Image (cartoon, rainbow over all chains, first blue to last red; front, side, top):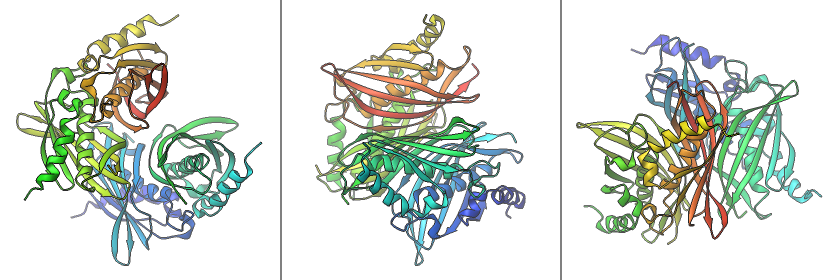
Amino acid sequence: MPDMDLEARIRSVFDRQQMLKTLDARLIKVSAGEVQIEMPFQRELTQQHGFIHAGAITTLIDNACGYAAYTVIPPQGSILTIEFKVNFIAPAKGEKFIAVGRAIKSGRTLTICSGEAFAIERGESKLVALMQATMMNLDK
Amino acid sequence: MPDMDLEARIRSVFDRQQMLKTLDARLIKVSAGEVQIEMPFQRELTQQHGFIHAGAITTLIDNACGYAAYTVIPPQGSILTIEFKVNFIAPAKGEKFIAVGRAIKSGRTLTICSGEAFAIERGESKLVALMQATMMNLDK
Amino acid sequence: MPDMDLEARIRSVFDRQQMLKTLDARLIKVSAGEVQIEMPFQRELTQQHGFIHAGAITTLIDNACGYAAYTVIPPQGSILTIEFKVNFIAPAKGEKFIAVGRAIKSGRTLTICSGEAFAIERGESKLVALMQATMMNLDK
Amino acid sequence: MPDMDLEARIRSVFDRQQMLKTLDARLIKVSAGEVQIEMPFQRELTQQHGFIHAGAITTLIDNACGYAAYTVIPPQGSILTIEFKVNFIAPAKGEKFIAVGRAIKSGRTLTICSGEAFAIERGESKLVALMQATMMNLDK
């Protein structure tokens, strides 16, 4: 049975992020330790070759990782991105993009996350970026 | 005397990036090895606390670093972001934001860059993020 | 059937690395896309609390990643570490340490790798560090 | 006037790190926000081409950064490396190597550092690696 409280809490933070509206992003999966976020192709987010900009892909994965961290900390806590590192592996070319964030290890102060972004084109999924991130667990 | 050709080339790539229009970003400095980009505060780019989203700040610094790399490679070349790592040091709170990108070392295939983002609030400038990036030099 | 040529090539580079002798490291697994390296606890590699130094753990994972990259490039090629990022997740406390390196994606010029280090203590294995690395594929 | 207490505290931690003895490293500068560490070339630390291994260079910079963080936190505190990212810019070829660590920003919980390693060969100094690191400030 999905933890509706968890999902509701995450959705409430998600909905207050204007940047995610700008990306037209939506939560597609919330489970303990893993979150998935999807966004469609949008011309407004492209770079000079017409693919999605590395910065938009990064924003998507950062959020998937941040929300994955939310799923493993106490309910009253919140999450702050301390730092991340991203490798861009293939051009972000597709109709939509899915970021998967996973909490690898959560301690008292920090949660280490791993994230991926996939481009979906004609039903095929391709890895386009890989992230390793450090999140801070705040008490409120 | 500024290298107008260099600036014109960079401006031409800059203008083809829709993502930079979405950020309302503009080039404010182009010199050999250093580029500065500025963007105003925009509600559309905020996170849940009303500050600029880490992803938007990252996009700004990534571009400053990428264009800094452009300034140190042959004129016909172009630049691709291979990877970057960003530390978020303070909340991106301010009226405008300036990213500074510097090419630290450029080889045949790669250019290593260092970048910073500053928030400007009531005339005060504050470091909000620090990037270290690897760019690939493409022949065309 | 294991590719003995591949393993022999990797072992030959491994044996020429004095740093790996200093770590008393040995190859324990070589397969297409994955390499494992083991090292025992050694007082010479400790930090001030008596645990293995982050630098020694990093060296171990860097090598596991580099050799994993070797397994996916043409036989005459060689590998150079361009950059890596490591998170230290738990103290490196144990009798021995195993690094696992995996090639995630290999292109013409670069191979992106992911690596982990585990501490083994009384038969229990614990994740102590996580790496994301960029390797360059050289022609010879 | 140098802060002898600060230097003495740092030297005391330094001397308890066996790994630094293995590198034959020594503190050459301690000031508020900046530490320098030097090590000679040693065959025991080389990779297959006879240059110093990326892992040994990383260890040196990590320590310079960690001690730089020590210089900006309260006297009773200690420092733990959370994560770092290193770019390897040129082969570590030389008679000796100097790592410079700088504390860029120190907050209540974290200190962000920037580090460089230089190879010294026939009196010439060359940048060989660049680090960006996150350190945790512990109360004791």
